[in-house]
Length: 89
Ligand SMILES: [Zn+2]
Image (cartoon, rainbow, N blue to C red; front, side, top):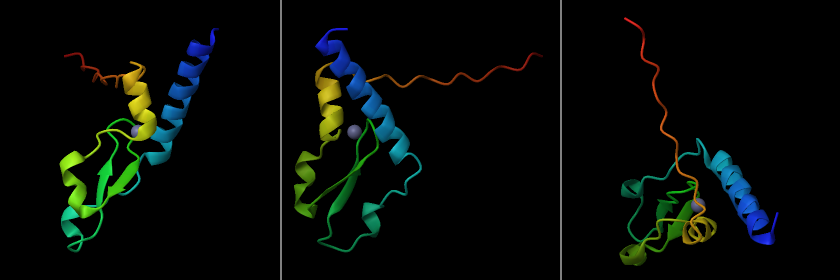
């Protein structure tokens, strides 16, 4: 494998590890926070928590730094749709 492919496979392995680590973690509801408290956002890729000062809402990141690299390189794994097995009538 060339170094680019190795880099890609390592980045995707790290991505899956982050996804597993963030799975099921409780999420902060920003509505319940006091005024002036930092706002919480979650990466659309791996779900990692990102907190920003309340006045930074105009530039909310959609992905964490690591996932941004995956997106920029076109390496972001697509979420597979789970098909429900249809019961035979
Ligand atoms: Zn992420």
